[in-house]
Length: 66
Picture 1 (cartoon, rainbow, N blue to C red):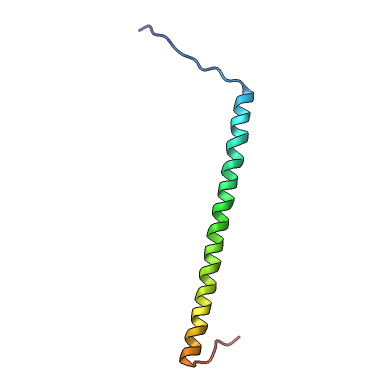
Picture 2: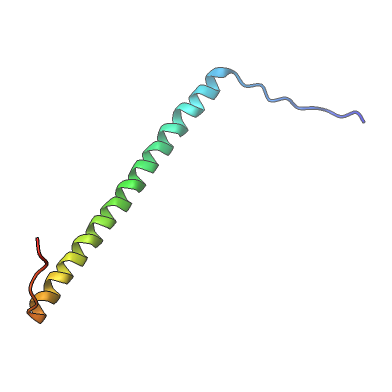
């Protein structure tokens, strides 16, 4: 079998440039996604605490012992 073989030649500088762009972008996306998840968890925790306080006030139950 004889055929034409195409070889793509790249130099090290193009590889460094590609990695230098995509790795920091991926890290930035990961940090933003982590911050969003953390913020949503904190918001949900605060809303649950407020709902518990409102429920205790409405039912006139004593608060939790601190």
